[in-house]
Image (cartoon, helix red, strand yellow):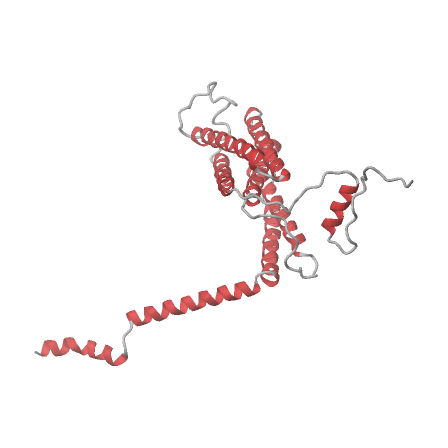
Length: 301
């Protein structure tokens, strides 16, 4: 009799002309590795709104941290996690209002992040988004620890710079979560065939983002007296070049027609406004002459 296998662990192979993502998923399935479904989506608008709120609160936290450095208030509260040996509210005067206010906003953002991660864990169907929420919690905990070490070790440059850079990383995670939780967001197959020019727009945007982050590192090092301003200025020029290059490529590859229509609408609206203002302020020449001569005739009477 013929031998019939009870089960088979051999995954079906993807077609030869299938996209690279499908071929990679087939290889992971063949090796028994878990596959990540990137095409799923979330449909929870309140979760999305809350993630936006967390990202906005994180932005305010970054501003509060910058105010601490700008006002030399980093050691206005000399201990951590307490403030002057107590968890009670100190007198918010001088640099204390910046340093302790920064700590209060940081604690609030930390609680918001924990709640966001819990919400994602319960309601978010995509595992990779849930893991990103967990990473956000770990990042905010590490950020708090670096902030405490900054105070306890009297503002060492490496830890201070690390504290500033990790804040930017956490902000990027928060913004990413706000994007990924948008209802209907999913990783879909490409809808536009990219221009074959080198570098590709994807690589160009990724490289520009990396250069911007490097600029933030140099700026943090300069603010904390790590070195002079020259490297910061040089990389600022590279950032400007990268942003202009990306803008030009986006306008050339993605949004040429849309931009053309939008600019046309703006020109039309501007022309309409000018025409209406002209008809409101200016009169016909004959009528203007009559209006100008009217007072003279009135005086003659």
